Length: 100
Image (cartoon, rainbow, N blue to C red; front, side, top):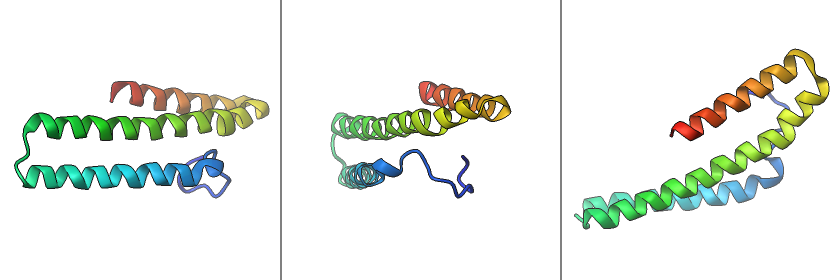
């Protein structure tokens, strides 16, 4: 599925959990911004940046897992070009996560 598709997304059952994680990460980013504004020691800022990065990676892995178990699994049942497309999308998403 793409963002403009109206079908059910794979993370529908975990939506609240994902939103909570994202809100927490958003708060952490605001905290980092304040740390920089207040001239906090750079190593302490980097520690917080690392924590936010890990939080976002956790969200990404959860989304990927949901995508594989929902969208890709459904597409492979259909087979053909739909399956090939979903597998390519998943592979590209994994590559982007690994490179980031």
